[in-house]
Length: 322
Ligand code: ATP
Ligand code: MG
View 1 (cartoon, rainbow, N blue to C red):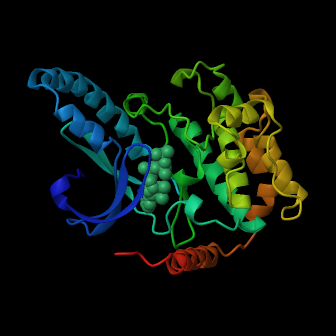
View 2 (cartoon, rainbow, N blue to C red; view 1 turned 135 degrees about the vertical axis):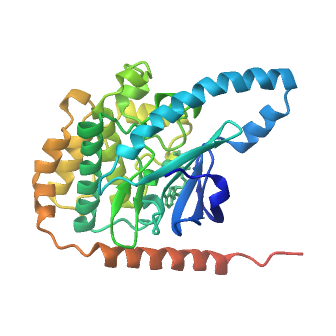
């Protein structure tokens, strides 16, 4: 079925990224809660709208060709149906802006759920879900994710872990100018060095394996392993990723198996990094197959913890002067 803006009732904002906002919406005809992403910056769009009429016409013509390419590419998303992938419901365009609607994940993204780190059995379940999701994208749809990081790993109260925001569309990626190196880079060393010329065509699956390993460390420790406050600038931080030793899971909290699994993802040489198959066959994830970790309970606890932190922050705020 197709979705358009008239059918949607806007609800709260779920978050903001570099390219726009994600809002919770209700699809009235089906009564399904969805997450709607409007990836194009509305500020940029308003600025463009202020340009001359003539200029705008040219812009729209250019955009039309691009939009058609995007529509065709988005079509792949309808085939991306797997337990570890956030479901895609449809996309629509308003004034050259693409909005897309996906499954609403009611516990949000992993970056906001694990401020204190997670126990090993939970980490193993997250890791195996992510690897299965990434392997499905690669094997069944020939898609490389290209943006593996905790904000793109979503969780629901059923305890399910699913991936979103994968690079289906070269055109869409280009439109979104996904070249930003923010203060938290999950880019593999070879990508930072530019050996692959920052070219979408040469991005290989092993670069995603690096990002996966880095995400595991962040989820395990509760913080990004190359904290910006440690480095005087982004250049120093990127140099550490390229030339320093890769980070590891802490010895006192995780088993040798878990630590080795992450080490296999974070080899500096992309050729030496583990494949998805190897990662699934590793003792860390073999053990997960028979583990009866209670993910529902973990999500419940993590959400309670998040609320407690938010409340504490409100209480410690000094009274506002009028
Ligand atoms: P970036 O812009 O660098 O990709 P990001 O992934 O955080 O960062 P968005 O993809 O725009 O940015 O998402 C913003 C936030 O919205 C996410 O961090 C996540 O918490 C929330 N979010 C995204 N999609 C969903 C969804 N389907 N269900 C629930 N929350 C979501
Ligand atoms: Mg995202």
